[in-house]
Image 1 (tube, each protein chain N blue to C red):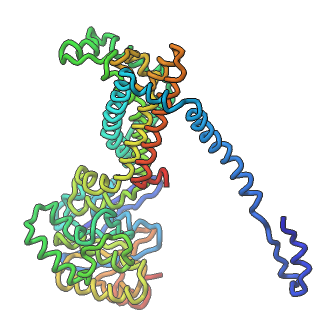
Image 2 (image 1 turned 90 degrees about the vertical axis):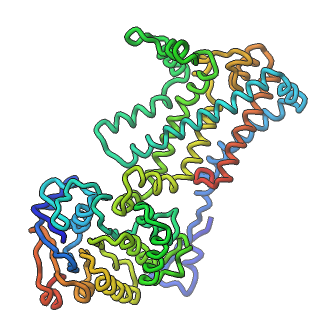
Image 3 (image 1 turned 180 degrees about the vertical axis):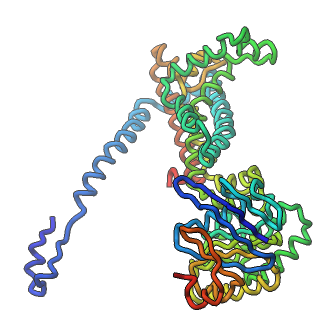
Length: 224
Length: 287
């Protein structure tokens, strides 16, 4: 479960004011809104990369507002993927598990499993240099899922992909949703993404955050 | 020069399409000409040194035990100073690049002081630092009496004088290196479970490899050219604190111009080797 209570984030002159919302465990929530309203800022606050000026962030009922990012155990896929330039694809999938000092067998098993689900088995030995947008996206997603987080944050994950790859990724995200049951918050501008994936849809604008019924979102109202 | 009127004479051209074909020759002439002045100066400087000295002078100078000792001390002290510079410059460059903290502008300015300070003043400041009593304790006597490791007028003074300037360059280089790296990767690493230390060690440092090589080489080259602070703080004792730059000075002051030029040429060779190392590692500096 992800819960934000009166969360205010300040960054220079930008203020994200008093955000309140709750996503239940296992739900797939989509967050939409006009550009520059602080959707990315909100995700970064939830995973601990941004200082919260006021309010509380709760993960599974526990107040993590002052916790540092490594303690929160949240999978995060940033918009720019931010892959590690010196590591191979395989090392990306193993990274979080090695940090957790998992056994070699377990790491190999998990890497195998992830690469099959994500369809990147043939890329494992490659460096990330020269990967296509869709491949980079899969690696970033695999890296975030590798340590089986209970919360997953996706920041416009499909915006850089072409139409075909985007539909493949829709299917993939659905599969992840069904198989892992991870609580997901997915930032997007695309109504079709919201349509095909969301259990719930939130809208962020100058007044704050409000929930929109999925049916209205499907009618195109979520994407003003 | 190409005249646009020749196109206008083309019967196919109409009023709406009247292209002017312009030449970039002047641009290349001016830019290339000014650039060539500097390149020519460097080439002529090297040529003059080479023409002045004969291979015999060169080998004679190299055969002198003082010069040999100076060469050995130069290579050793420059290497130690460069290693220390990278060792200190990497964390400082990283902190300056990644964090904004109160007084960062002050730290940033302080780092540049060894670069802008007149070399003799830096040497004098080092000398005073080691001999000025602080609350009845003198830094030099602490090192000499308590640890048995005298600094002033010994080889450690050479390294310290070289380090003071070389490290400032190393910090600058490392800061630019980290500035050019996207901090997002380190942030994502933290969400995956890295502490700040692990993110630095496992994600930032491997990416900074080329920057580290550049910082080391620049620090080494700076240390090679160091003279003023060494003269004041370490002295110019033959066979003890004499580095190659000191040799040039000592040979010049005794009127031995041949040996001075021969040693200078030796330093040129060392500097060229350093630049070649930079190229081999393919760092952006020489690409």
